[in-house]
Length: 304
Image 1 (cartoon, rainbow, N blue to C red):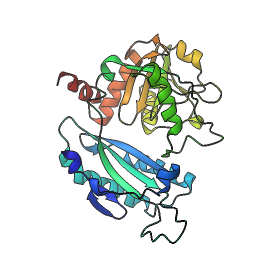
Image 2 (image 1 turned 120 degrees about the vertical axis):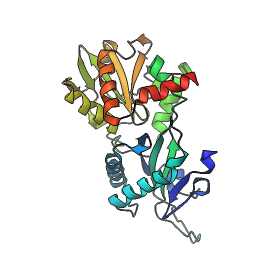
Image 3 (image 1 turned 90 degrees about the vertical axis):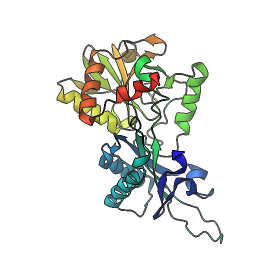
Image 4 (image 1 turned 90 degrees about the horizontal axis):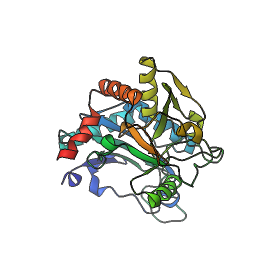
């Protein structure tokens, strides 16, 4: 199996992924104290790796964690990790390339730990393309959970942290109602915030709208969609959006690293056009930019 052959970087050296071992007293395990980031590949090549690693270092700075590796070295190590694993990909597969940084072991006595500083992992994980294939045919059902997004005044959502409990509980709320639905959390003011690892966009009368960046994790894919839209002459508005805005939207889609851009088929049970004209236009331009038809990449698995 490929999983048994993959190689990861761990604290200064490359090793079989299965041999990476983080102490159970690591603060990431005990407290969720750590940060991570993920880019994806297209045809085995990383997309906007630099931007993802820049965000990683902003997250680390916010959390006051020094991983002991410079920016350029992190880029080089990520590229080498990918190079060591690229041969394991089939033609229809791609990777997440991720950097996972913990605060390390909290030594509370003379325990004899060989390493108590931050633990650094760089790894490649196959994208769940086959599992998510139907989303590009049927669209994503989105539901707002009872659990709101953690208030930005308490913990900034702009850092990509290991602590995902808020998102997990929100996802559980939604899965109890519909196992196929995805959660879209509201912020403390009742405005649309974000989903677990994705940003939302609405289209209303040709206008493309997305929540402001201060109460969300501004995704690299979100920025890519905005860039593409402006190049196409589509007006983009970053603003507060509430349930009314979602209810009257003509189209809705999410942007994420793995899916890139994927249409929403319903919002809180209200049906939406799957891949309307604006969504389709943006999707085609996104495909042209990355040089990979990620829609067909997913759909090809439905006939396998």
